[in-house]
Length: 81
Image (cartoon, rainbow, N blue to C red; front, side):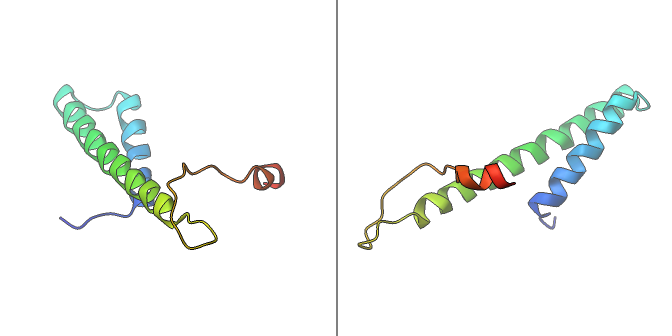
């Protein structure tokens, strides 16, 4: 099965939530749809974990040494966004 992008997975999850909230599915269809949503959520979580690790790796000191730091958004960007 071809891997979807993170964004496509999120879009699919949103559609799944709407379907489940609509009450138009049978119990069996609801369970299958829910299972798909759980798989997508796990995939997205894994993708986010990998991205976090990459950010940690990319953070380095000016002397070229690497230090592990938690990613924190720039607060000045939040004020202008």
